[in-house]
Length: 456
Ligand code: NDP
Image (spheres, rainbow, N blue to C red):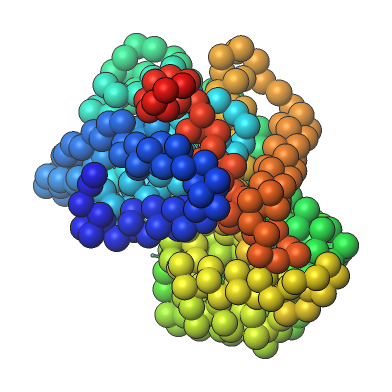
């Protein structure tokens, strides 16, 4: 077993899953061995990346690929480029990815990778040189039937393009070895939008089940201002909701007029972020308030939905209490492990108070990232399918499949939660997601001899 104490993010992810799958393990103790086995990555590749700065000097970064679990299919998961990247972060992300990918219903194992390279303040040429140097080593370990990385924080369409171009040159092979590719060279329609759109499709089901309602007029708090945040916001607006906040690593920008951000504002924010600038560079004629160094969660007296969409651990216990006090009914993570364990406990406690059908006042219903944000990897899976067939599906076709996957994922979480955890009239989506994802992976590992049940 790995030294968990040295890997706080990974330890947190393991704890979150182990605490919620306990009802299943109590009923099926033979699966405890599978949980022990699944915590250890099948393989970790660790390497250095040396690249040349514009001034000719040499820079060096650490890079990793965690090939965590291939029981359901080739390793699949994004590449994060951010100074906070280390093995603990990538193991937590890869571990979550195993179960998330299982919840999409597609044939994908779990992996994650990246580097502590910081794209901020780098020229396009420096980013290109880094991506080429990164792929020089990574290209030996990935492949269309082995491991298919994708984007994540700091890795958008531009970086995927550079990495794909590098792989093609090194291997002399035009293959579906990355997802999130450009529309004209193997990419799928809706991949950039998929995580944000999928998140909103997932919450659409929650809105209907808990309050028999939809997005019209809902006041929505979003953190982050990158890929996931932007497309979640655009879909919320399209469905009639009001987006009242964005944020980045420097602070939060909030709307106090109740109307919120428009699609034109979001296009301008996307432009700012593509230039790797802070949100303060967004020009808005004083329509929004800037809160330096803050996150949006404590800045509103009332709201309906919160969608953390920046990074891990971006909702603390106190912030969770502030969201509950503001009457927020739904919290769904666009980011991976967006809420701390303490924050999840706050939300889950409100759910547990609801002991009879119909009495749902005061509930803040929580959906974990591995379910609510699985739309991104789901469309990556659809991109892999299109690449294998050398076909391209239309926008409408991919969007319809994404919606279908999100609805099936939600129903799976809700029904599994209902089956195994009977602590409230409202199902625990976090327990449901973890149990459903784990059982599927553990059964495949059992079939493949990664663990076995004595005497059977
Ligand atoms: P982007 O790089 O496009 O955007 C990230 C956003 O989060 C930026 O606004 C960034 O601010 C902010 N951010 C990053 N780190 C921090 C930090 N330490 N503190 C505060 N803010 C921070 O990434 P994505 O939108 O792609 O990813 C956001 C989250 O969604 C991540 O958790 C990712 O793992 C998850 N996710 C992404 C998927 C995808 O398809 N892209 C799929 C599933 C999950 P700044 O600009 O200042 O750096």
